[in-house]
Length: 71
Length: 280
Figure 1 (cartoon, each protein chain N blue to C red):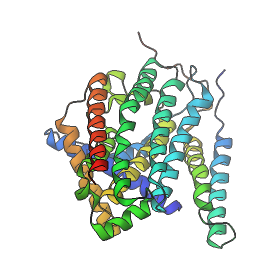
Figure 2: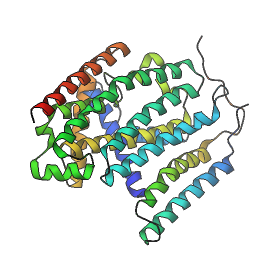
Figure 3: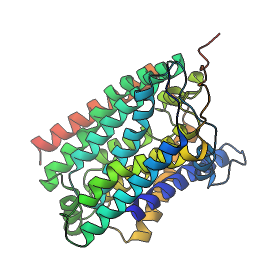
Figure 4: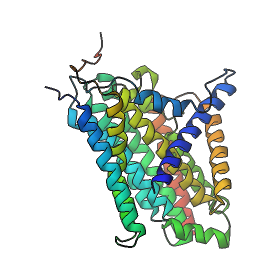
């Protein structure tokens, strides 16, 4: 059974990842975290932010589709 | 960091748009506007999206995250002047990601694209023997060291032009509509990305933008050296136009021919590097 995408969860992923990335960037700029810590954070946060935001925009919460598998 | 990420993504997509426009004009078609790939990314992000019933959901979604993540990491590696070997490791990871894209959907078109990705990896990866030629001269594979070497000795493109050619072919292999673009050949619909529609494709477009930006920046830094920012961007546009000419004028090779041509060139590169070692 393919899981359905929930928009509320997608939005939460986008917001949390963006806030985490910005927080780590600020802490790195302030010298609290070592150099490149912000880069490491964005490697994880950026993909999650992109997909979370896009899914929040357009994810369908209904039944999944069956792809075309040839004639 | 986020500013560089967003700029790299958008400019990379703009370069892909220029690529399509130049190919179209060479083929006497009007072609899409140069910002078409940016519009594609936005358009796909507004498409209705779900996970196909036949897909492995974790892999289907996970590969998109990994695809963006690895090229994000690659961008930071280039910007911080770290090792060239990490860029090549990311390139190899990308081949595995393409394979994952193809296998995760349950579609035969995607699977064939994924399989072709692995086949092409066997011939593209050896082209990285070009780094051996670079290492012979610079005694380091750190991008910052390579750039510093060129400030003293001039561009490596003039010193080891064949290594530059090998790297150029690696970049060409990753450009759409090229002679080596067998992973997304039209007889496979869209190859490995056939079933990644809507938001997933928008994520893949972000990855493609970053990938193009990173590969072209790497090529210019490694073979031309440090450039002022605007000149670097101009260099990337010039490089893209030259790649577009190659893509427009060369037909897409069959998978067998693509691998054969790349393997022959990799063999010639190996001989070239051997000669450089023997006769420094």
